[in-house]
Image (tube, rainbow over all chains, first blue to last red; front, side, top):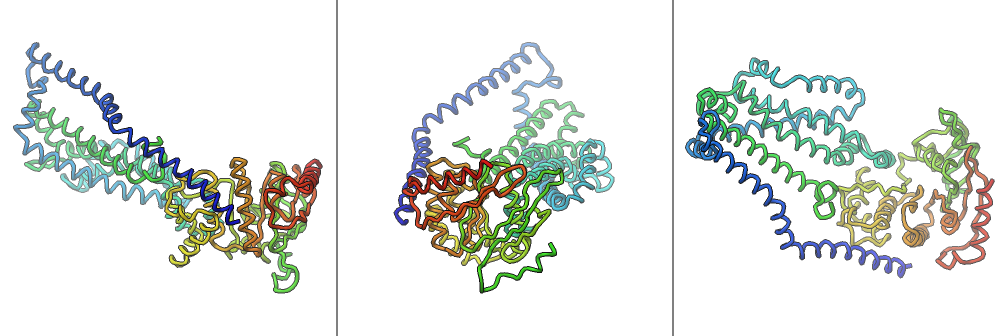
Length: 295
Length: 265
């Protein structure tokens, strides 16, 4: 019998070795290969970018278009450099509002989803209203929020939170409700309590869905913060990007307006990449969607 | 249900029947007769297989034993009490065709799950998990993630998880159904070895593979579908340990034929 198990062990060993040597082999031969594939992937878009910006610059110069109508790329860079301290303050303000709103939408979105998922009755009675709430455009209720919470940071954070809340809620809820039937049976057969099933099975199983919600909500939070600043923006030196955009538009500082808009989109991209990296790290050990080498 | 009281609970004396079915029936609301009039007494330490085509009610019998669904007629007694009560005692363990391992947990955390759910002390969880991982030949893979393992290894982990609570009754629902023939035969041998080390453990094994049923079991219950009925009960009077050679003996062939005959009814 011991022989049996020993030989089985050997098979198992060989199996795992074969798997791991596979992946190691891939990494060893991969360094120069990876550089080349990166080059292949990055070169075309970089080239397209250069052609586009160059064409823009050339077009503006040759056609003599007025900078307050369409600034040249060089004007935009110049405006950004000139107002760098102001721009930085605006970016910083918008980041803090977006991150804060995003964090609140995670906590409340996941929290409410867990609450709804733990009782079919609550879910059935509340969820339809959550959907209706979602269909109300945020811009329509933003003035109300300003009335309730006053212009400034509070209202802006709440708007950023509201816009990211529903994607978090619905994604988490779908995740919590799509737990594998066999697994749920197993937990039932081993006498798991509702809490144990929730925290040991349903929430971990919902993580891929929660992560999908995070990716949606993080970019929405940046949009929400900027929309909030349009409506509830605080003046003076501490205004965010949305406020800076409205101000520069009213002063026909079109180049700076472009700089603010580009900063906002860069901010959104950076935020998304950060959340993306976080979700990769969180799921890398077990979920197919984030397994680099095999996927 | 009221008939339960008339049966004395399992005592120290007399023949110990871990599971008793008398006139057990199950009719689903849509009128399908899944199980009809099944009478069976399962002794302690038996390795009993249910064999039959799909739809013969073997899985329904399993669901009733675990209390996932109730019978519509007759009597069912598990560990001397009702199935639901028996489940609460944690003396039963389960292995399904699907390995049902939690992909976000390591092998050892998967194995300790039944103990963790019961609130057993961490240290004891670990010792018990190491014991059963050794038993299934996976003690070097405690820290591995399920996705790193082959199908056969995942099934071993699943078996280890079932054994970790030292069950009196082990229910296996087509556990090797999704494995290739070679892995399947290896695991059959390992399962017999594990069972023989703990002869108090009763194994109920559902399969549609006649060879598997005869190779493993002390008794084979042959079931036929529509309505799900016991067509025959075939004793396998071959002593253990059984090894690969058993598969090629004339006796094995005769028993397989006897079971197959039962399936034709």
